[in-house]
Length: 182
Image 1 (tube, one colour):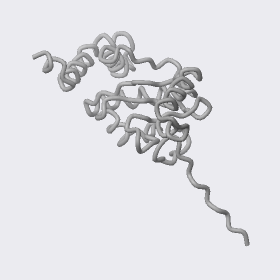
Image 2: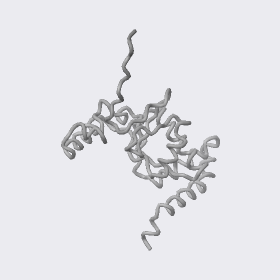
Image 3: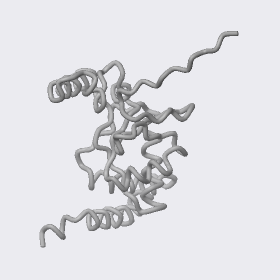
Image 4: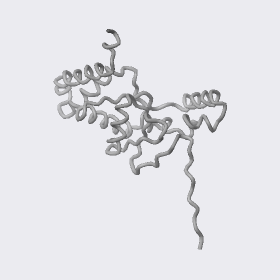
C-alpha cells in the first residue's frame, strides 16, 4: 500500500494538481506570471531539496521557462538534481571518482575537474526524472538547453549561441580536423 502511495505517477499527479490549485493565488500575486509562479511553487513542493541558486541568470531563466512549458503543455515534471557546484565540490567529486576508478582518464568519463566543468560556471543542470530529461532532450533546444553526453541522460547545459557538439562522455576530446595545406 505504501509503495502505491509513493509511486512516481501519483506524485506527478499530485504535483500537477497542486499547480492548478495554486494558480488563483499566483494570479493574485503576479497576474502576468501566474502559470510560471504556480508551476515553480508546485515543483518546489515536489522537489524540496532542489537549489537553483548559483545557476547563471540566463541558464536559470531558460531552465525555469522550459520546465514551466513542460508542466503546463505536457504535464511533465522536470526537477533539478544538481546545478551549480563550487570548484571545491567539483574537485571533491572528481578526486572521489579518480579514487573509485583508479584512473584520471576513467574518472573523466563521468566527472570533469573544476576548470572544465560547466557546473562550476553555473550553466549545467542534472535533471530528473528520466521522463523529464526525455522531454528536455526533445524540446530543450527551444530554450537553448542541450544534452551534452551520450552516457549521461540527466546532464544538460545552457548554450545561448550555438548548439554544442554531442559527446560520448564528459572526458571525450573531439579529434581536430587536419588542415590541408596547398
